[in-house]
Length: 200
Image 1: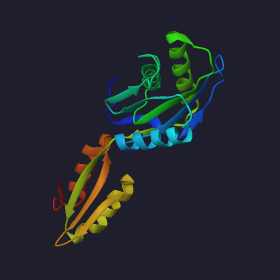
Image 2 (image 1 turned 180 degrees about the vertical axis):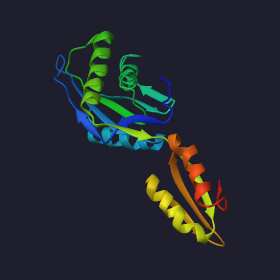
Image 3 (image 1 turned 90 degrees about the horizontal axis):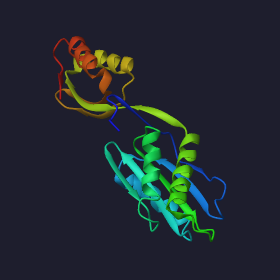
Image 4 (image 1 turned 90 degrees about the vertical axis):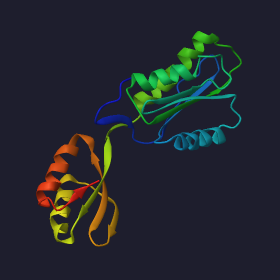
């Protein structure tokens, strides 16, 4: 899946869906946003702790172009890859999906497992709240104190939040600018500060 240039789709928050049992087996799908591998591990640790008596907790995640999937003891390719296929089919990034199985006593076969794990993940993602997130780039603005008013006006117009600020001989602030607005923002910053501000 090619990355979207200026935005991506992800899930708004954690959610869970459990479809009907399949030949006695339960398949519980958990969906969560994740920005880093550490976020993924925290989500999976929570799920495993809650379902510590389950036989399998299979999962897949996508963070930008990075992906990983796990069959967690199920036959190779029967769980993790079908879950990842659902993430990509829904065109999502920065998301982790796990499917916990409680074995019902009847073997499903590889084909049955692919349908069960992929189906549970897909139904959970169908029900999840999807949000579009702008991809941003961090910019460092340096400007004299006399330009504070015009810079504050620019930040307000662009609805940008100051991430860090330092007040020395000049003002130095850091902001995250949506990449689709980056060129226009940099031009406007130069215009408003009359060339006295610098961008890093």
